[in-house]
Amino acid sequence: MGCEGRAGAIPAGTHPFLPLAGAFGAGILLATRLSLPPAAWAAGSLGCVAALLLAWRFGYARIGRALAAASFLGLGAQAMGAVLVEAPPNHLSRLPEAWLSSPIRL
Image (cartoon, helix red, strand yellow):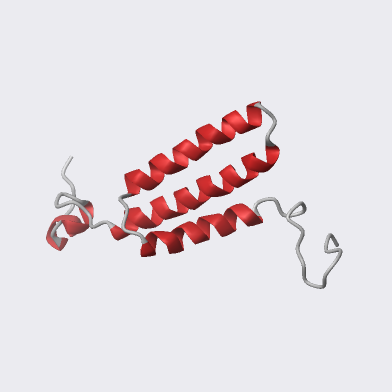
């Protein structure tokens, strides 16, 4: 069922999101190795999307696929980077437990 050629090979044409999921996972791994702020990863991903739209407009499909994968790599790294950055002092996770368990008066 869709697996012609080598035994166990999964053609990318039948599973178009497989390379994007792999790029997202690679971005998560890359974010743990490089210490860039999440905004830098998001800006890089946005730049890849802009280049992807230009490539799609002018008919460069192969470059467009690589740019889509690079964009998902940046999105995965941005998601992991946001987790690695410590929460600000006024974040909900830093409130005292007594404040969170008390009823809210309306």
